[in-house]
Length: 345
Image 1 (cartoon, rainbow, N blue to C red):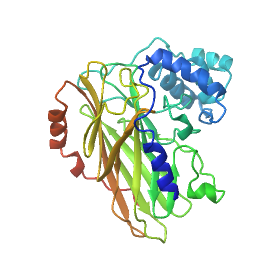
Image 2: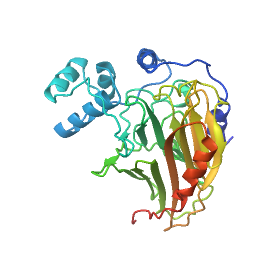
Image 3: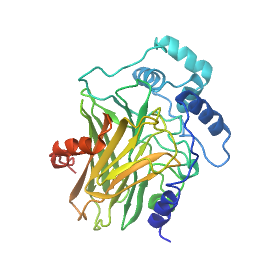
């Protein structure tokens, strides 16, 4: 069986499975830390120690104030002792009681996901050593501590094989050749935009631009074909993980609304809040209840050597019960027609 088929079938086979229980953020996070500290078949993201004072301050604030990490979780994410973390918190004057709420009319809060805490509840054997390179957190407008994690892209499939995977449970074409891709980070811009840019050994280059606004978050994914081969059967697998959002963590596969390219997950038990995502040109919408996560995966056209392709994505939150009407409103924004050009080669 081909790598692509194996990975997709292994994910979809668990899409309606999982435990039908709802967990609070606090209990889930403490349980995750204990579980992953001793898990025999998987490891947390490899630690990344900040290399400058500015980066130390940024990541401490990101982890502690925004993502509500414990000292132990920060220690895992940074590869430093808890004692050193305590010292750095004091030295950088991090207020651990601070909360950052989204003001009315302000853009949704989007940050690089810091790693150190696995973004899944279940099916963790399908995401060993999850990389933070492609993950961003989008915080809900109603709860300063709740967020979803967008993995864009989680994977890139093509006629050439599995070009990229944001964890290490199935080998990419590079790993099969003994090539290890260096870690990368999101570039943070003053206007709140995040950008990624990665070059692959065969000359392919891909990246994502994330643009937050008050109404939603727009994503622009791109590939530049700097290789000598035609790129066909391209599929971006973009995962929206729900573990970090209180009320969206129940592992039940039928609690979704799908109207391609849109897929939405509801808040429980009231079903009066929603997280909505879509990608265009859409290939498939689906979800994995075990994680839990939802997907709207784009299938762009073929890309000849020297050419580029672009896919467009959307994420927003909705408070109400008329989800069909809300999706029609989002569609009227014509986000799929927005102009975007891939960077120059």
